Image (tube, rainbow, N blue to C red; front, side):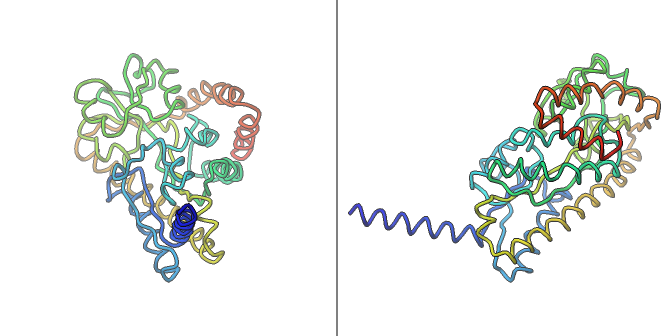
Length: 324
């Protein structure tokens, strides 16, 4: 009987491994099917099925439809719970990737492209340590300051409670006298209504697309950028043929770029729509940007030194790439 059980177990294991090679479960943190992020992942799944002649099928599940917390997506991929995912909340599992999100370090699209290209080899290694293959990603527009109270300068943040999505954003708010609060996206509308928070750092095409009715003011000060990583389980990826691997990489690269472009375009559309609906939008000024950059620069160095030599080197690589 023991031999029968063992044989059955081996057979099941072999079947599971084979299934992982051509039938993947995918997950995204986003629960809204109409966002550029979900549309991009849907296109990837559709193109992979078509362009590999069915050798790889990817079934996408939206956020909250699987028992996977947003902060655990990279771990879930590494553990093989799902084979493929888009992860915006990867920094807990791959903290060195947070270098791209340091406030005031990367200020525009050109700098982002240079910084990402320079640090990508480090990120690939860091994800590999989690049994994850980093295939690509996409970026949200700059994170600006949306509030329930008038803001025309950073000094207006003093004494106010602002929702942030990372410790790095929290440091920025603290440096200008505010109180950073971390909440899930689903908690934001109620928290704004009840005064638990008085503002958020987000993009017009990001959170503000859903929460704009609670946020009558937008100070267009670019604090930092947020990005999502598109990742695969290393074992499942290795089980694919080389041809399918290359096709998947190519499709992810193309659709990641397309998703970023869609977000940038939607940012313009949403900003105009929000302003038309009555939102007061105030532009930042160069002097305040320069002041905030100088104020936050010591934090970049302290952040890197606190985390170790690898982070110090990574920060140098990024700063050299953007000339900063």
